[in-house]
Amino acid sequence: MPVRSPVFRPRWHKPEAQRRKEFDKQRGTSRQRGYDAAWEKVRAQHLALHPICCVPGCRTPRDRLNVDHIESVRENPAKRLDPSNLRTLCQSHHSARTSRDHSWNR
Image: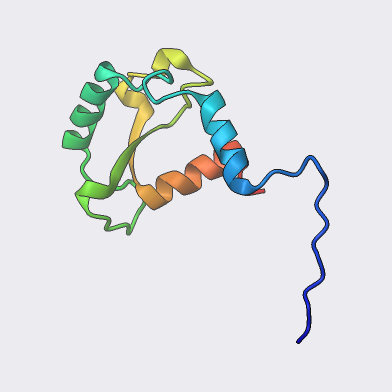
C-alpha cells in the first residue's frame, strides 16, 4: 500500500483552528467592539425599515439578515450609530463584503 509522504511545515506554522482562536482573543467580545444595547436598538429600527437584503435579486428570509456599516466603525467610529451609514445584507453577502474589506480572501 502506498504511503503518503510527510508534509513539511516550519516550526512557526500554526493550525488554522489555533490561528482563529488567537485572532478572536485579540479581537475582543462583540460588546467590547461596540455592539452594545444602543447598537441593538439602532439595528432593530433599521431592520424594521429595511427588511430585505440590499443586493438586487437576493431573496434571503428576514431571520438571516445583518446590518452592515457602509463606512467601517474602525475607520469612522463617529458613524457607529448613524442610520445613514447602515445597510441591510444577508449573511452570505455580509460575509463576502467583510472578507473583501479585510483582505481575508487574498
